[in-house]
Length: 143
Image (cartoon, rainbow, N blue to C red):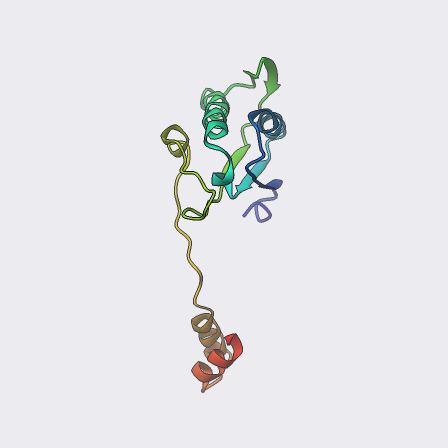
């Protein structure tokens, strides 16, 4: 999506070693550049750090809602470009993953994802190209 609308999108792979100071630096750059970011495996971050991240995100979101040109973030005045956005991915249920705190959950909209049916996709594509035996061919292609 970012590529389609010509926005810079930074994908960041989260780990349990992240601390709030590193995230603060990341958020400062994000807010001042107007870029988008996607935090992959967001729920790998420790619960204590997630709570601080929620407050950091709330500061940025409040500045965006108030249409501020700049705002105070971690004792520094930061220029705000309101196109900045934060997205997260999570794989709940794995070992070592934490549940998001409620104050952080409230900042995001959830969207369920699932593995696509590749055989059905291939079958429809083959039918559209004129194959009459597309179902059998599709099963062989994706096997």
